[in-house]
Image (cartoon, rainbow, N blue to C red; front, side, top):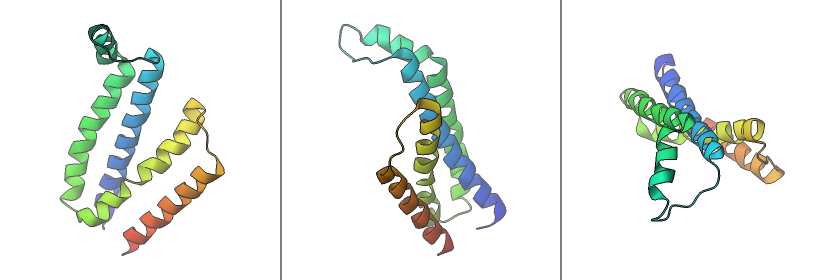
Length: 123
């Protein structure tokens, strides 16, 4: 994989991870909610106009375009497993941004993901 292809894959992964983090920030801003027939419209409007959620959706749109460019240069069997790095990015970012737990089991899982991605990338 050349440098441009690698950069596209990493950028796509980071955009996807950013989208998840923005969606989480948006749902945190809205608070816990349930969709029912009675509140579907008011909650739907809150979700539709929450800036973090809109930013997350925008990141997804751009990430799809970047990912299509990446797939035009890299085998899908190499590129797709690299999306797993998004789990690593999100776990670490969620720890710092949202105070989510990073216990020993999660850290071991992150280590396994990193080893797996390195093995796939070197194949």
